[in-house]
Image 1: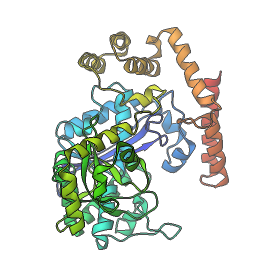
Image 2: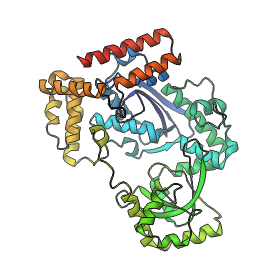
Image 3: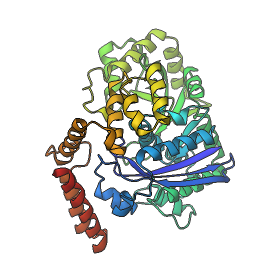
Image 4: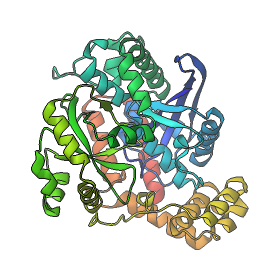
Length: 455
């Protein structure tokens, strides 16, 4: 079964924005529809949505505060229940691994779910149709028609690809419309590029990907960067990050020779970080576009055999992957600590109790947590959903924290601020993106929301 899904959100930051709409269609393996859902939620009190996000999605201010809609907390549990009910399934979408799934994980994290990785558990797996599109463009370009953008370049945006390939009445920027368009594109690929489709399905399984890479034979990796065309890179497995078994090294066989085996650690660090990349990082658990090479070039085959015969080289490259971000600045905000560490068994049991309790009891349950991240998020949940059960001192501190975030003058904040709202509203007005009634509704909404927290 496939579970195609899409989210519409308050902005582009998974950590500091939230989903507002979740749509999904369950299909059989032949992509015939079995069930569909389309749910929305209201805005969380601590989030200031980006005006451009509302303008693009068409979500009105009235929808944001509609009391008949579920809270973000309730919405996250509706999605969680659906994932459990539809399991096992392949959770698929367009650019889902980089965007939608990160929003799902943040929804589960910030709403205190015991499991953040629900699309990977209970025999679920994942597939990103945007990656499949890149593979089709590189290996079977005649399988699809390729639209052009406003600058005359080939476009890989769903709202251009789907209509170009026979999908009529695409309601772009609506979650359900994008899901329907994605299924249509998947059906075209399955019919006209079956070999690419089948290999991409194999790549859902990280163990299959790992076996292909660790065979020591040359493989083809297809990736796209920026506005460039997707392209093939021919390489070989060169090590595993000792701190993350899902992160493996891919040595580009066109950019090196046998001397790479004797490179010192400093040169390997450069090879991992430099551009063009002599050594790429592949996340084997994110359905990468790796394809076996049936008849590798002689030079590729010889060099691949040499690399495969030097396990100590693999170890040094793996360590270079681990060292690359060793000096990275620690995250400053609780939302950014989602991957800081796994929950311990005791906290998972507490979170299970939190799920089924009422808000009065949840305030006491949060106090039992060891993980400071979860304590902080738990108190915010109580403040957002049942403030009467939050201590008065905490309510004052939480309101002040929201006010400080929204009114900060810092220009590079990862969340939407009053200054960003004013800038985007000005752009929307100047660009005549919305009519005057819509613009006035947005202006009134932001004025009321910001004024309330500014008191």
